[in-house]
Length: 152
Image (cartoon, rainbow, N blue to C red; front, side):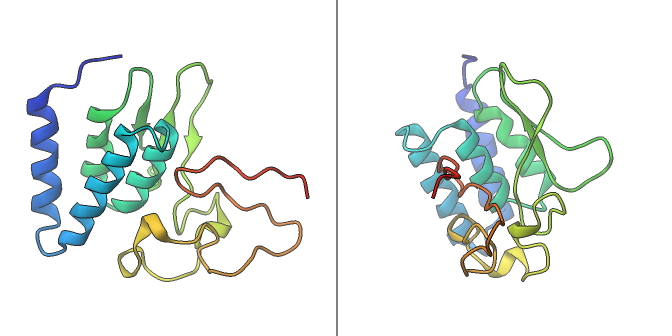
């Protein structure tokens, strides 16, 4: 595991605080996510999904979160110019999509719903609409939670 430099972590926290100075609830939500990650209540893919949802639309902060990721994990923006980040995981080929509202690869992630800034992203229902998924529709995993089994 690569060593987290205290200076880098503090600089990133300052960037988050500056960016959301007028919305301290977002900064506090980020701190809560980090506490949950540190206590191992969520795994690395879970923290990536939650932070990407919280900072969706802010490329600098989403990519800057790489500072906190263990060796082998990396958040990237696709080369096709898509605003939806992906991540790499050690031992897994290719990239993994992050289900975010508006992402056409995850229509149930809120593709046509409200704006991200209107909701608390980490608490948003996985379907983006709040209701149960229709029959046969697979629901993306809730941030920080393992995917639901397909067994009834």
